[in-house]
Length: 152
Length: 190
Image 1 (cartoon, each protein chain N blue to C red):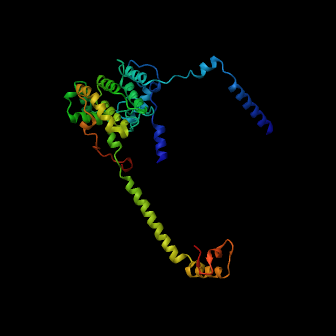
Image 2: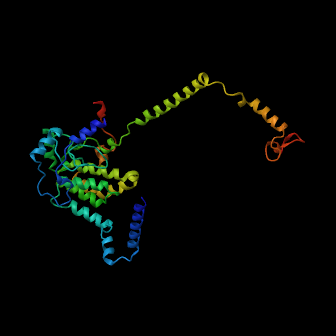
Image 3: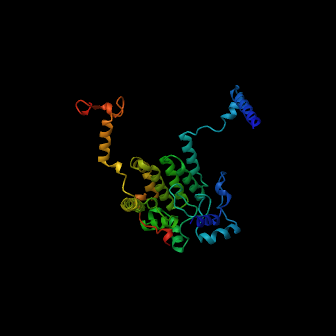
């Protein structure tokens, strides 16, 4: 048992000595090479480029929407506009409304502050494409009740 | 129920690898192999597979975190297909009813329906209050019929007599109880 303890402590000692040694430049370069922080602009451009691809299909568009919903942010209006235009190109009206709902959900407790501004920014696109907001669709309040699966 | 869910999970089928691949676009639509088709389509009927969804399974689920499920909610009935044709034109020509029909063909619940209050809290509250009430009744019953009467030295008279005796005997003259009693004025020291 003691032998194990001694071995472990010597290993620790070695490791500590390794860490304390002055690191060569190569090592530092490797240490920090796992990517840099993406700025907000880069993030926006990345998604804009993605959504503006001419060969974007419904599968990719849905992936982008799901991913954007997973991010800790409310997308910029330009991203939303790009997504709505992608919906138009793919002829999927329901997806556009669904995504607007998702945006509203992402606003969370600040919906009263954020959503009017977003709406003001995307309003021209909505009018141009003929997309109704969830409120205009009557989806801001529950429309249909769903029977519980346990009662079926 | 968990058993049932587990079985359902095992039965659900995994979509092709495309879904998790990070490489660039497929230039053509995803075409399922015949084997996979035979496996998936009896379960989802004629519903179109449209995306990766929540976890790559060809299942429909309404979740706010994943607004776009993997398959459409409704099968491609002739009416829906007709609407889809009309959807290819200008969306301004669609009436509100048609737009709603299109939405419901793709999705089951709107976000406000997903997040609608279920009223379940009333049941929980009632159960909590009922159990508290039951506890009270049980306590009353037990006190009345089960426990023996409390020992006599818990009564007020007994304790007053006890105190008088302690003062008479001058217990704790230096630091204790009697040091706080003024024997001249016959009252507690201030």
